[in-house]
Image (cartoon, rainbow, N blue to C red; front, side, top):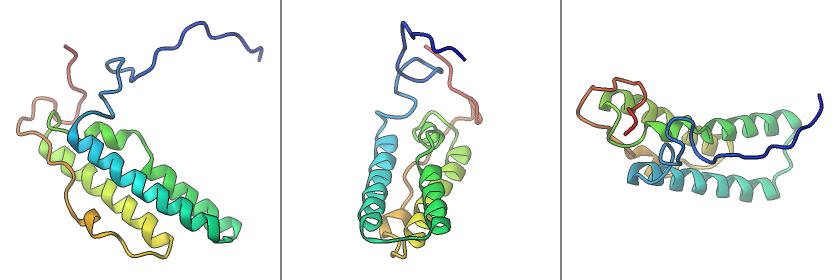
Length: 131
């Protein structure tokens, strides 16, 4: 494969060409805050622990699951509440599992709902329409 110069790159989601898919909504921003807190704890524990390769691999895999961009797409009021609640709960469960794998207590805040979604079912789990 021959490397070629990339003349132009557009930042943002392929859905709208912006970052609004992941940030800006208060629910999305709260989820980012929770992820940042978990990552900072992960880094702090990692600095003093000497895990074997298997444990380290499992922890990095769990962190990668928590960092998945799709979680943040679901948060906000433009997705149906039923869909949002499933993904929102899974996001909190994955963050909780990371804390448990680190041998720490799960923060109380991870028992609190981040996002409830919207009332309508117009999208019903599909992408919102462009403007």
